[in-house]
Amino acid sequence: MKLNFISPCLLGIESAIASELKDMGATDINAENGRVLFSGDERLIARANIWSRFSERILISLGSFTATSFEELFEGTKNLPWESFIGKNDAFPVKGYCLNSKLFAVSSCQSIIKKAVVERLKDKYKVPWFAETGPLYQIHFSIMKDKVTLSIDTSGSGLHKRGYRPVSTIAPIKETLAAALCHFAKLKHYHTLYDPMCGSGTVIVEGALLANNIAPGLSRQFTAMTWNNLDRRLWQEEKERAKDLVKTDTDFFAYGSDIDPDAINIAQQSLKRAGLEHFTSLKVADLKDFSPTTERGTLITNPPYGERLLDVAEAKEIYKVMGRVFEPKHGWSYNIITSDEDFPEYFGRKPDKNRKLYNGMIQCRYYMYFKD
Ligand SMILES: C[S@@+](CC[C@H](N)C(=O)[O-])C[C@H]1O[C@@H](n2cnc3c(N)ncnc32)[C@H](O)[C@@H]1O
Image 1 (tube, rainbow, N blue to C red):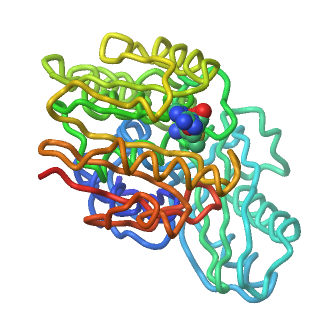
Image 2 (image 1 turned 180 degrees about the vertical axis):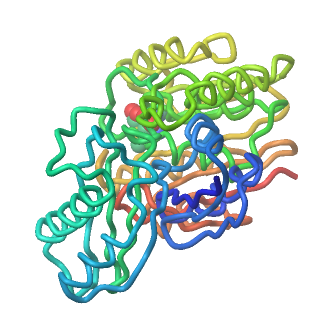
């Protein structure tokens, strides 16, 4: 059966998702602002959940229509084939958001959609009410500029929850964004990765997963694993396939450091949980003493911006230190994400490329200084 999917994501990383989906065999890939649409069969539900490094979740799209009144919202929702997915005993709560639309009351839209799905399923299953004691089919709606899109979530908790992070430091970067930084920096299995302000080690872990072709969702659970109408063998087969695809002969190594011993402690726990300690080395160190000994390196870092950590003046001092210790030399690339538009001025060099990305709600730039 051909299914249409939606992968919501952080703004700026749509192209990374389009590229990973292509590798997974998805078709009709269409990157929009903050989401990527694609198609595939039922196997892709398992594959995309297990493999996506950059998506927030994988939704099955039921359909889209325009609605400017509750009547239109009700009718449009009722016309969609909910019974193709939701069984007689399944649970189907509704959540979503409205943006720049005539219909703006989220809780009212939520109850209209719920009522419409109930009506549709009552007709189909010939029952007066639903106990909803079965597996979860979380319905998502978005109403943007009067266009309603309805979907069912296959992931459960967000895909950034890989399961390796024990507790957070003050300002951890989202796993999906850290993975995208590694993708845009073209991190490879024969590279040496550095993050000298590694905090809880997210860039180091995501870099090691990517370089060794380890699927980020290999050891977690997804909602659609509980669905009765989806062959459970697909999950097993896709997990086996993912295990076979892990690169076992890489030269990859990663060095992480941070001035904060507590952060290094957390990073160590994350690496242990992810089973990646043998690819990595962590230590407590001040950025100003950064003096790598390897000939080549791919440095990816998320320094303080002066927003959540340190003040702006202190952050700018750090950018100056970075400019001094990140020497332009053959075989080295430096990749830095920050919200400070004046970063290149303090760093002292113009980037070869920069990319607009969002770290949560904070608009950032990813400054890239390429290898010679
Ligand atoms: C935005 S956080 C990095 C978060 C990290 N990417 C993560 O996911 O947890 C910035 C880090 O820079 C570290 N830091 C600040 N000043 C530093 C310095 N002079 N030398 C090394 N690390 C420093 C902080 O301790 C903090 O962990």
